[in-house]
Image: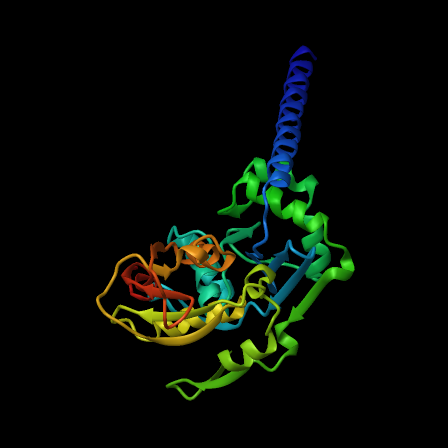
Length: 317
């Protein structure tokens, strides 16, 4: 009887300790985030079935949820080749790349910046019947305890999770837009060597269907132009980057190749635009160095992509 009482007290103390830590983290995180100006759209891939891309727009308190059939085939980065979203989630865990294999492959396939990933089950995508209701429950203050005890597979820290919870708490149900890819004509047929046919994304149709859905108001409002140059021998690198920049609201006026080759990407711009939302966002997405020039001439901003980014498309398994 005494042993049972001691165990009960220990469990109670542990629960109270975890609860206290959670409350402290929530209060501290909310305070920090309240003081910080956050205008950039936040995109996260959620490992559910169907796959979900949650996109939070802090500037107007809205959110977009794009759901995609998990069996859709895309090209995995790092030379993995063609796999379904679900397979990329599993492969990332098996090959110790975590969910980055899925999130980074999804970013390149959809042409939208995705920094974070989160999932419940390492072995499979979590079945969901109502993605919006499920997401509103998942990104809630009550789930902070589960996050702290590492119940999820994710690259977010507790502050990032609290930020998403806080953003979603400011979004009413009527301000959440659902884009169901399964109901849109955004694919084309690909005939395989064995004669079988599979459906793959058609970038032109996809970009047209989601046009404006992932734009960032702070970037679109600046109306700055950008020229994108590939300094490597990896083909289509500039086109990939230009597509993503266009989807978030940057006016890309030139795409081409240019030497010499650089390792880390370079952003060339004037002092006047150094702290613009557009420059800051480009730097954040591609981890670029910034160089000040007297006049960009060809565009307000010149982006020179290098070998560091190109390694994403080489076989490094």
